[in-house]
Length: 141
Image (cartoon, one colour):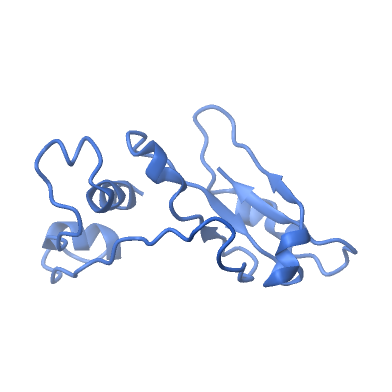
């Protein structure tokens, strides 16, 4: 989680890393790459591609497997000073593509000091249930 926040700050050129003279779009050091992949510090550096934020209304939703929510890109770019910012979303098959435009959003908030990480496993079965007549998209801030 720390890697993602740092990488987002680097790529967006926002504080505090930008204030320290870091360059947007730089290549990961071996130590950074190790925290991203879970490998050793001897892992070879890998170049990164900055996130491209879609224009409002552009793109369509892609369904994900139950328990494998997707990271919502660009939201945390607005709050780069919040190192632990993250928003995931869970799209069932019934909300994929253009069908997603009519699917309701249900926000699952965690308590103070909590994280979004438990929601895909606890809410996912309801979101991906094929017994429902109406599909909905789960959002985990």
